[in-house]
Image 1 (cartoon, rainbow, N blue to C red):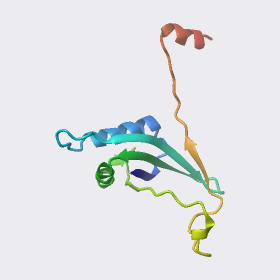
Image 2 (image 1 turned 90 degrees about the horizontal axis):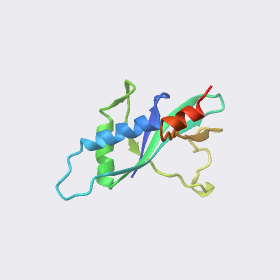
Image 3 (image 1 turned 180 degrees about the vertical axis):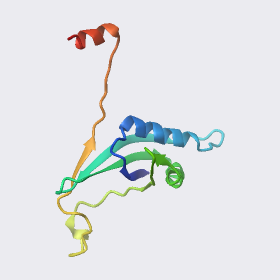
Image 4 (image 1 turned 30 degrees about the vertical axis):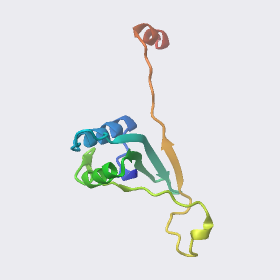
Length: 135
């Protein structure tokens, strides 16, 4: 199940978001001999409108569906950077114009969407660090 957390704080990182969701899933009671929930594809989406206003949204995938439903219910009681959050199921929109009813498009015009790419730093030892960062 794809889950979106709309309007997360701008200071939220992918690593922090992943830890937040994984920690919440750890509190879910598991029945013996059942598979743990699988959490994947943690992305931060940045929507920018023509006026330059940015909105950040979290998008991730949880399997099985029952774990996703449980997570949505329990996200409403959480805070991220001291801001209350909620989750809901994310549905992919159809790309064709056939489903649109003239005058009924509720989407904002000119909205630009990006995905925030996490920074991955690989340091394999003190020597590599000093070689790369000598002044």
